[in-house]
Image (cartoon, rainbow, N blue to C red):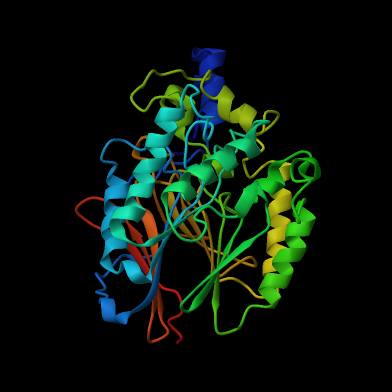
Length: 397
């Protein structure tokens, strides 16, 4: 939504509050409550994939930590994970428990936290697929001082229920990148929180990699040592680029109805007053987890530099509560934002030059590596139209 004022004399009739509001919202965009496609040829064409064609499947969903009863996104995720479970790996991309991770046993909020986590664990158990959880800023006690203890409690709970190898990575609340190879791809699993700590060397003193610089070095070795026959997919919590609030983008609703960010149905108009929040958040009250913060800028610079040596096919993250597929530029072939795992926590989303697809809707991303060498990325949503976006990632093959 863009507001143009053709006759500035009109403003004299109105209060300074209204004038301030008009200027603050001027140039803000509309959120994509309907799917956005850069071009019509990116709209889904109902590609059918059989079990026999699939070499391996990965499913990417983030920010699932406040599920409703019978959460629609998780129900659809279960269907897709059950299609070919022996070849499927689910990645929960952080913020698995809102609001502040896993509390200690017998403390207030513990029972609710376990229920929220079990709603996600049940998808893994019922489908028979493999599942991996990674931490987000809310799992880190919402950047609290007790964050590492909360992450370890969450890992203990998950690994105590799911049998086999560790299902919470990286291990031990340390930031060392973890590696998982599936047929046709190497998955590199990051805890991006290491970039958002003021004193990471103190928090991770007992870890082999205790700083972003040491993680950078280890990533360099991992990527350099990856066979060219394997496509690289990197998963973390914080996206490199996003066109939602976490990426510094706000919309007319944020200015006019700011309380809807707290409660979806609280449509109380607060012009000008509502604009103070996005204005402050983009200037002097920057959230360290947003793209405008120095923490994020450092992460983006370092990850882009290390990825340049052997560009990943996909960098996938959550954090912004929407579904986005972007061209990755120097960092990767494609950037995926899949942070719409909780229907009640969706964020507005716009688009930029890099955007191929964007939608404010519950859902997840599916990547199928096929036996003939092709790779298909799809955006899946609960509803009448199941697949709302699909793209062959290596059509040249």
